[in-house]
Amino acid sequence: MTLPKRLRYFLLRDSQLTGHVLQIGLRVIERTLREHCPDAPLTAKYGGITYIHRLGSTLNAHLHYHSCLMEGVFAQTENGLRFYETVGLTQKVIQSAQETIRKRLLRLFVRRGLLSSDESEQMLTWENGGGFPLHAQVTIAANDREGLERLLRPADLCCRATELPGKR
Image 1 (cartoon, rainbow, N blue to C red):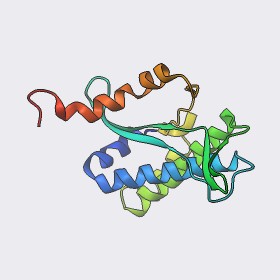
Image 2 (cartoon, one colour):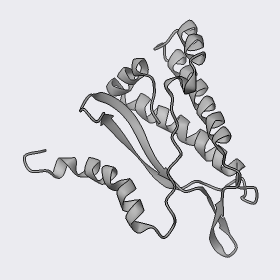
Image 3 (cartoon, rainbow, N blue to C red):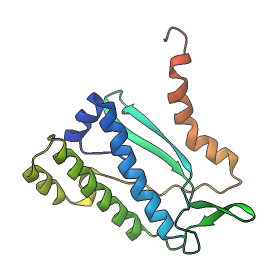
Image 4 (cartoon, helix red, strand yellow):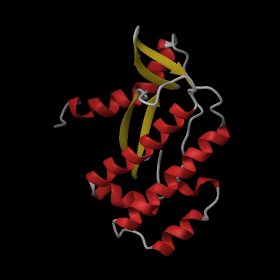
């Protein structure tokens, strides 16, 4: 998940805002996952990890979020923890979640005085997600440990960057 360039600047300067943006995005994703697990109870929770990248591939300032989430939700049952797999999670559903995230984040930026209402309304007219892409194309099978390692390797490097020689 990322945001348009004009909004990323605010995230780089405000860690609370960075966390709030992530929280809004993950709430929408959790609700979407739960809605597509028809047998799951309302108390079911999603599972996964998210890491925040602050740089792009050319070491430019480009704050964005990488999440690796289960395609379903977990709930406690009489027999222990149960996983409920999603059903009917289509590209159209993902686009709908993306649009909800975009609207909620723009409202957040307006409430915080970082965007005017007019700017927000104009950004809502942008096509192709309007700079708020939500990529959900990669699927790793439950038993594909090598695939999971390849997917999560950037997170490991990100977390270990302070362990490199000469770094603090």
